Image (cartoon, rainbow, N blue to C red; front, side, top):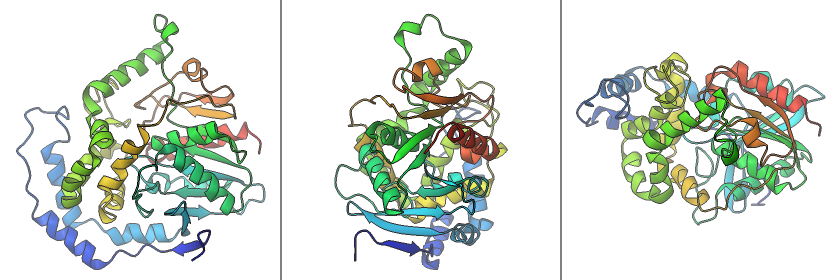
Length: 380
């Protein structure tokens, strides 16, 4: 097989896998109830049991599979690894190419509700990260953020796009940042909805209200919500055994973050208490995303992205055009003056008054508007 071949791909999960899932759900052994009345010790037992019963009795994977298969999927080998991606070509003769990258614990499904509106203006390329969903699982060290960014350059060139834009959130933001840093002449500009920029020590005594809120949010994350990241970065294999064996464990590990990182009715972003994920995400959408991890046995392989990437050097300057959107419930909120220390050509910046970490999935209209606004300020 030619390593540059692009192969059409259809999602076709064997019924045996769905039967196995049902059997495992039926045999779930739950822990005792948490000893608090909120999410302070993690996702509550009552909600996990409720989701488990819905997953067993009402959830329909074939619905999600059909919706995904209505889109054009492909696989191509890059640097010895199969990369899965959706490629939607616009009917607009003036459409511009755009690659959009998800993060953890998300997937290509984060973008499912923005594909139709954005395809009016862009040719969309939406890959699954290495080790995620239907992409291959790296079998040796090296597949961190920089190598993934380089692979996205190769993917866009293989698709015939000489000049293009890039967008991302979470790990997708890190990959997109590195595309900007590498500046290999293909990418004409980037937009990120998680702006990676350290607070400026010189301004710490003069923080504006938005920066104060961002610091409080980051403080909550570091104190109460970053344990998963340490585990992913240090012992992803050990974590994988439990999550690969228990669908409920995998589901709880993921959906906890859709509560803590979203604008779903928290009284205070700095505590992430209160609120409910289903106030902004449908139950089916949450479980669809979990299924991409479960059906592809991707617990360990997705977590290894942290192990690969946290060993890389600090972020460098970006000189190509940058657009930034910072939602109030983003886990790493930045201000423009912080970002300008490493992003030297910010052409678009907005801080909407709603939304969180999974912005495309949570607020698709807002997200689509931000993407259009950012790239309207850039030229190929």
